[in-house]
Amino acid sequence: MSNQLSDRINSLVPSATLEMAAKARELRAEGKDIIGLSLGEPDFKTPDYIREAAIQAINDGYNSYTPVDGYVELKDAIITKFKRDNDIDYDRSQIVVSTGAKQALYNVAQACLNKGDEVILPCPYWVSYSDIVKLADGVPVEVATSIENDFKMTPEQLEAAITLKTKMLWYSSPCNPSGSIYSKEELRALADVLQKHPQIVVVSDEIYEHINYGVTEHASMGAFEDMYDRTVTVNGVAKAFAMTGWRIGYIGAPNYIARACNKLQGQVTSGANCIAQRAVITALLEPPSRVQYMVDEFKNRRKLILELLNNVPGFKCNEPQGAFYVYPDISAFFGKTLKEKKINNASDFAMYLLEEANVATVTGDAFGNGNSIRISYAASVDEIKDAISRIASAVS
Image (cartoon, rainbow, N blue to C red; front, side, top):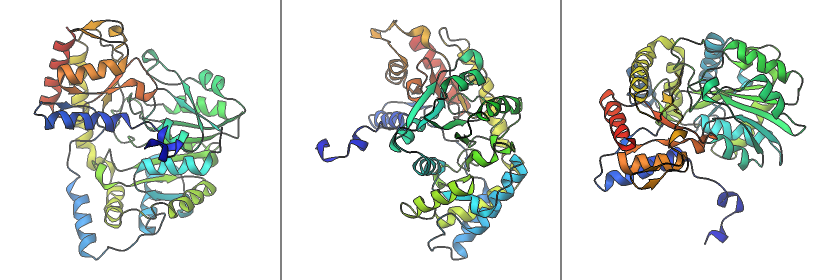
C-alpha cells in the first residue's frame, strides 16, 4: 500500500544508526550475544543534581503546557551558557527550545529552505543532515574530506562547492561521526570565504561541545562578529550530560530565523516537556566541570580503542579530538572475501561485523563517506576489549 503514502515519505531513508540498533536488538532477542557500538548514547546515568531538579519540578507541580519556545528561565540559562562557554550574546527572542537538537535542525531547514536551495555538507556529516535537508526540498551538496586531513573541509573546498543556489552550510564540531574539531583559526578561514557570499546561512551543530579532549579548544562560528547575524548555533544536553532520553535541544539564532522556528514548532509539537526543561535549567547553570568525569572516562576509552584497532590489519585510524566515536578507514577490505562473504563497501563490512563478529557498528555510507565505519566507544572497557577482539578474529 505504499502508493497510499506520500512521495516524500517513500523517498525518505531510515536513520542508519537507529536501523542498526534495531537489527542488534532483533539478534539479541534471538539469543545472540551482540555488543552494540552503533548508537551515540553515553552509558552513564544522568547526574544526580539534574535528576534531583527534575524531581523537585514534579513536586512543585509542573505539569502544564509549556511556552512554544521554552520557559523564560530556561532561555535565560541558555543565554548565560552561550555567553559563558561560547562568547556569544543572545537575547530571549533569539532562543528556541525544542524536543531534541534533531527537531531544532529540522525546524531550521523547514524555516529557511525553498525548493532547490543547496546546502553544503562537509563529509562525513551526521546521519540525519542530508534527509532533513531533502525533507525541506533542499539539495544536499556533499564535500569529500579525508582521514589524512582529519575529515575537515578546507576553505578551498568550500569555495569550490558554492554556487548561485547555495543557501546554507551545515557542519558539526566536534563532529559526529569523526570526532574532528575545527579550531578557531580553521573556522575563521571558512568564515573569510563566506564573507564573499553573504546569502549563505551557517548551521553550527555543537552538541558534543563539552566532550573535548583538550587538544583543540572549542570555537563557535557565531562568535565571529561578521558571522553572528548569519549563524544558527545548535546545541542540547543529550551527550555531555547523559540526557539522551530527556529530549531537549535548542538554538541561538538571528531573530528572524528563531521566530520562524517558533512559528513552525507551534504548529507541530508546541513546547518541549515541562519536567525536562526545569532539569535542564540546573544542568546549564552548573559549571561544565561537573560532567568532566564522563569526559575523562571517554578519553581513557578512546586511548584503549585506538590501541586495539591500530593492531587490526586493514584498519586505518586517526585520533579524534572530541565526541565518543572512532571513524576508521576500512577500504582495505573492499573487493576481498571474508569467510565466503564478498565485501564491496562499508555497508557490506558493517553487516559482516554484525553477523560474523556479533558487533554492531554503522556504515560510513550513512555519513556521506563510504570508506569508513563509525564505532562508538560509549561502552564499558570490557565491552570495547571484547568487541575489538571479535572484530580482529572476524577479519583475520
